[in-house]
Length: 349
Image (cartoon, rainbow, N blue to C red; front, side, top):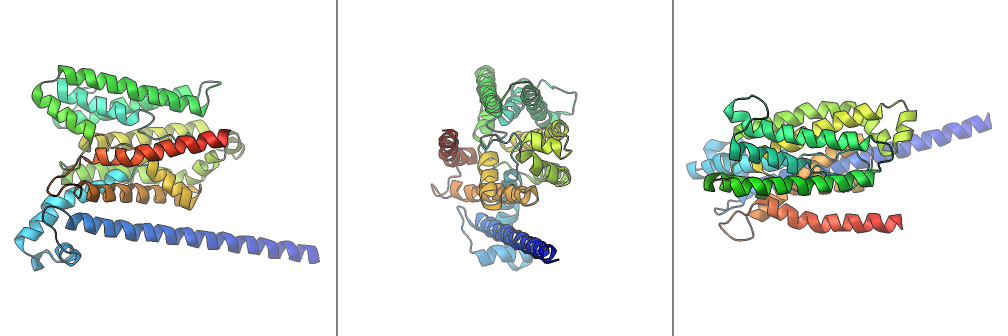
């Protein structure tokens, strides 16, 4: 009886430690949400014409209480950009169990950029669709092709995760070369539009684009939520996940297809914004761990916060000039990418 009581006490202590850990992670998510709201408000207030946070809050809660100029700047000019920064930033890392894997480093974003450029330069549809949907549909089809290629290669016998990442980087160079070829053939007007995609910019964000991007994200969230336990198991290793009854092949294929959609739609609207899908999830993993119930919302919040802060920085470098946001994320992401490579190399030694 004493041994049973001791085991019961130990089990209750373990459950209490888990509850304390869960509460701590929820507090972290709440803090990230608060930081995102603050960054969003600053993004609305910052620009060539600067307003106080109180003016921004008044414009949001009671537009009639502010001047027509403030209302027009906040709602018509800055609001679409600020909202698009949050929605586009809410992308997620793939499940190749490698911190270097992301839609950008695996070539999915490059494929989507090539698909969008193909529509802009040649107007060649990869599927019969309306002219207004040509760019996003082409971007998604090319991203889907790259995703399926990576998936089937990853299933080949003897292929390691590191090999898949290297193949993804090869895809990046391949699609970038094809994109350069299209740029060489493009007219002056088409070339300027393609350059916009390659730099990545939020300045052409509109409410219809925001609603489409947000709808895709909201449709993807239930799939990730339903597979949260399976995704957590896969992070422990494919063999362990299979021993728990997880269909690894199905979960991986479903997730990579959804990730390709999440990557293609923002790229088709705002261009290539690299490293958000790499840095955001890694930050979430460092502070929240591998439990997908906390990691997934943490990835969304960290990616959105990263891009929202980058939007502020893009307007702060030179007064009156808005830099393409893809340039800023690359400047932040490349050193982070190097640190990941070096840290993984040191662990392998």
